[in-house]
Image (cartoon, rainbow, N blue to C red; front, side, top):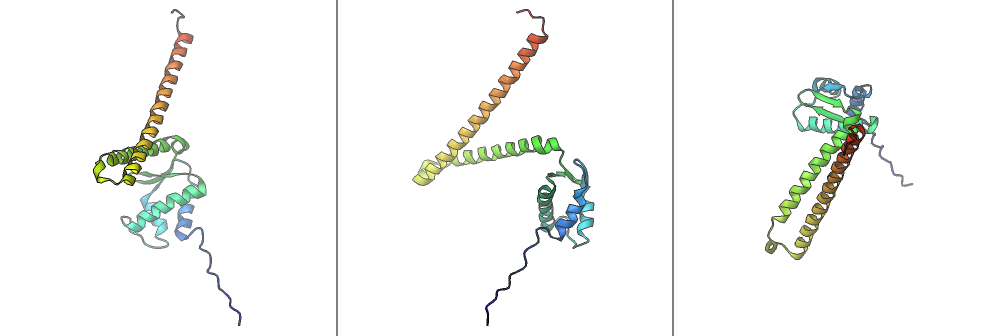
Length: 171
């Protein structure tokens, strides 16, 4: 008797929900909106999912990931309406700025929270960890401040150049 192992079938990369949602999004140009009702209509062909439940939220998160992976287009929320493919400028410039801003706010909040813990309540290891976290935050914010100052100086120098070129030439 030979000992054979039966391999389990591989999980499909795209499940039924992914397939119908991709079909819904595939031919939509950037900026076009898909309503909640349209999404619910195509998902109801497979299974009924209540719009206000955890399963719906999971489906929407998954939809955003699958559309981004398959088409390279980010799907963003349109409050009270549905979802839209982000415009190229929004996906490349505006959204990353928003995410960076939220990230800096979260880092700042965590550094402040860590700094508020009194030294006598911490072990030596905890104190070192807190000091490293605070130092990283200060270094990061210092780099951001420096970059902002450099951008401001660059803008000012451009304004000065344009005044000298377009001005009357008197000093």
